[in-house]
Length: 408
Ligand SMILES: Cc1cc2nc3c(=O)[nH]c(=O)nc-3n(C[C@H](O)[C@H](O)[C@H](O)COP(=O)(O)O)c2cc1C
Image 1: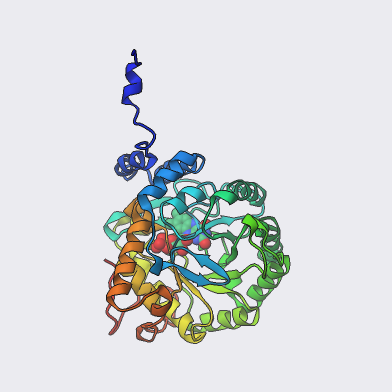
Image 2: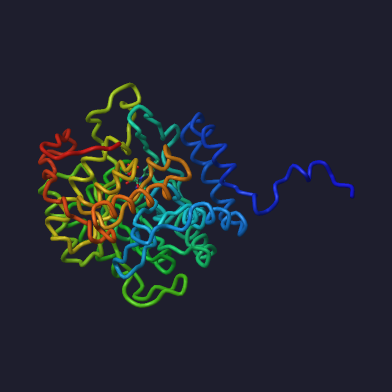
C-alpha cells in the first residue's frame, strides 16, 4: 500500500517521547542565553503538560519512584521528598510534566497579586565553573488571577502536592505588603496544597526587611486570615492550608531566632531554608560581580547550616524544606540528615537535565538502604548537631569547621 514517505519517519506512538526531544535539545539549551534557555525548557514542559500521550511517555520513563523516598508531613503525602523550588515554574504552567519527571511536589511562584514584568534583562547568568546561577529576576509574574486559572486547569492532572509561593508587587510600599500577601493568598489558596510566604528574595527592594519580627507577624496574620479553612483543589479537603515561611541564608543567628519565635507563635506549618544569597563568598570571575541572588553549589553549606539550626531550635517539630545547592543524591541525603524533611532543587535541575529528579530519588533510596533507614523520615536530622551555627554577621563566608561536607 502507498505510504507518504514522511509518515514512515514519524515514530509510532509508543516510541513517541517528548523527553527524547528534550534530551536532544538539552545540550543546545546550555549554549543559549540563560533566560532564553529557561523559557524554551518551560515551553517544552508546558507542551508536554497538555498532552496525555507525552505525560504517559514521561511517566513510563521516570517512574516508578522507590517507596522509601515518600514522605508524609503537614497533612500531605509526597511521593518523593525531592520537589521543584520556587522560581522555575513561576506561573504554574508545567506542573503535570514536572510531576511526570519524578518530582514529588512542585512549588510555583513567586506569584504577585497583580501581573508585573520583573527587572529589565539581562537578569539571569550561569556560573558553570561553580555549578551556580545568579539571578535578579525581580518577581516576573503573570499575577494571581492568571496563575489561579492555570492551576485550576491542571489540577486533575497533578498527582503530587502543589505549593504556591506568594510575594508583593514591586510598587506596593513595604508598610502595605501584608495586603498584597493576603490578596495573593485569597486568589491562589483554593488551588494549593500549601502556601509559602516569600520574605527572602534579594531582588525586590526592601522585601527581606519583612523577615523582622513585627513586620513578619503582620504579614503572617494577614495570610493566615486569608487562607480558606478548607482546601478545595483536586478534591482535597479538611484542615487549614499549611502556610510556610521561606527564609534567607543571609540571616544572622539572632535574626533567625526572632523569626522562628514569630513562626512558632503563628503556628506556621514549616520553614523553607533557603532562598538565594547576596554573598559571593568562594565565587570568583567576572560573572560573580553580577547583581542578584546566587544559587547552586556555593549555597549548599550555608543553606544546610540554616536548615540544621532551625531543626535544632524547634527540636524537629517544624518541618524544614531544605533548598540550596543540591547537585547530587549525596547532597540531598546530606540535607535530610542536616534536618530537612523535604528537599527542593532549582539550579541542580538546570545543570542536571530532565532525568535529575528520578536520579536523585533512586540515589537517595540507595543511600537510605545502605545506612539501614527504611524511609526518609528516619534519617531527618540525624546529623543536625554536627552543623555550625549560622554566622552572627550576615553574608560572611562560611567555614565548615569539623563537619565533613561535600557538594559533589
Ligand atoms: C532564576 C531563579 C529564580 C528564582 N525565583 C524565585 C522566586 O520567584 N521565589 C522564590 O522564593 N525563590 C526563587 N528562587 C530561589 C530558589 O527557589 C531556591 O531557593 C534557590 O535557587 C536555591 O536553590 P538551588 O541552589 O537548588 O537553586 C529562584 C532561583 C533562581 C535560580
